[in-house]
Amino acid sequence: MRGLDPAFGSHPGDNPPAMSRERAIAHAERYFDEGGLFADLARRVAIPTESQNPERDAELSRYLTAEMQPSFERLGFKCRVLANPLPKSGPFLLAERIEDPSLVTVFSYGHGDVVRGQENSWRAGLDPWILKREGDRLYGRGTADNKGQHTINLAAMAAAIAARGKLGFNLKVLIETGEEVGSPGLKEFCFENKTLLTADVLIASDGPRLSPQLPTIFLGTRGALNMDLVVDLRAGGHHSGNWGGLLANPGIVLAQALATITGPKGEIRVPEWRPDSLTPAVRAVL
Image 1 (cartoon, rainbow, N blue to C red):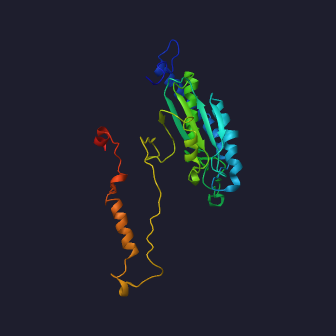
Image 2: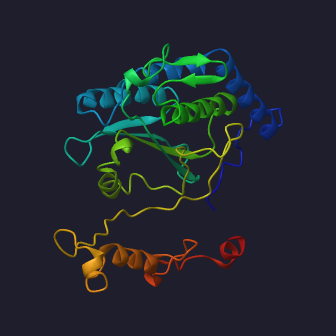
Image 3: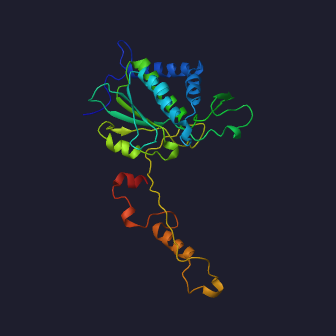
């Protein structure tokens, strides 16, 4: 049976789970209190990885090769930077730490690109590429999406390894560089490398928090399929006083079409779109 290492965190002569947990937490607290988190995040924020700006293509690659790859390798990960299947799209970094093929393999995801810095829109004293602390807040492009998240994840891994000598599971991490422009090539990359990316569970850190004071864990994410629904019946405008009731109104047609898709509360009315995989337990919870 696949599962976590039964010796997870064991050290001779102590209470393995409790003691290793305490050591890991203490390690993480020192990392934060002594400025390690600030230094690592500041270095990453300083790389202007604007995927919306074609002039920053070299910065996307530099973020992976000069910053993230060495950071993972220091924790015993094997890394490779892989080209995007789509031309002129940002590369991918895959970091792997396989401790035992019989253990659970976790797959995690992050993105190193950010939206445009918009340097002129920041208030005095702030710069998108310079991390700055004001009270209990950190300012800089990418601190909340997504460099801050994978910096914290790396710190957690380092704390666990320092305390236990291992994670107790296998881990694969994919860092992409095009999320802010719709992740071009991600689907093709995953399809081409599905064996390489095989895992038992996906745990990603990229999304909103319901409260700034508390961590938020979402147990599942719905996908999306974008489409354009257009009603173009004729050229030009036709006055409803002369033509009302005689000519179909595109607005009314469109409203009726939308009403056939969902009900007043958002329930799906297209039978083929409704999931058929919900278990009785999940139905009961919902």
